[in-house]
Amino acid sequence: MTETETRTLLVDLAASLFARGFSVGSAGNISVRLDDGGYLITPTNSSLGRLNAERISRLDGDFQHIGGDKPSKEVFMHRAFYTARADAGAVVHLHSTQATAVSCLPDVDPANPIPPLTPYFVMRVGRTMPIVEYYRPGDAAMEPAIHAAAKSARAILLANHGPVVSGKTLTDAVYAAEELEEAAKLYLMLRGAAPRLLTPAQVDDLLTTFG
Image 1 (cartoon, rainbow, N blue to C red):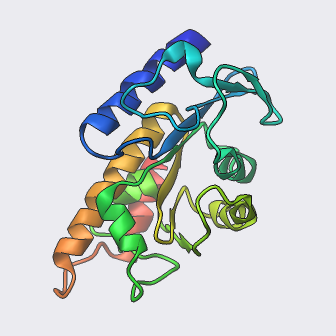
Image 2: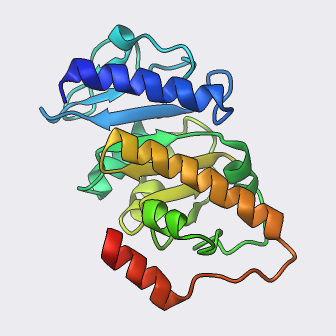
């Protein structure tokens, strides 16, 4: 996929997320790794629903701004995933309502707050999704904590903030972020009940079969 095609796809997917309420106002940011080793990332204070493909920020391989509008103030969040995970081709950070709600709950397992309720959650998000402790938005001090968590997880929840999700491609990352939001919704609906979870053997089978 060319850079121009990637820019167009980013705009289209971001607009779809915005239109369905996964992000509001100027919340959230998306990045993608390019074939030349550089990156595209949504600009600071931009709405995912109204991006301009030509103005999306361009970063070099060292995450330095080299083109387009000023990048998101949370570049470090994306850098933490890319440097922790060789398989990360894109990163999506949203403030989606249900996942953010889970990140605010004090009584969930911080190592894995959403249990394996459905196969697609496991297939797209993975075995674990830890909560990273609270940092002020835009605080680069959270980068080491995100990096450490991302080494063993494709996605994380930032406490009282929202999800950060990686994928092999931009489309994969967006699909995973969408699946995470639905899993969070199911989890909140089932709190107080005793739902049937996927067994460890079933989770292993899904990850072996689908990666």
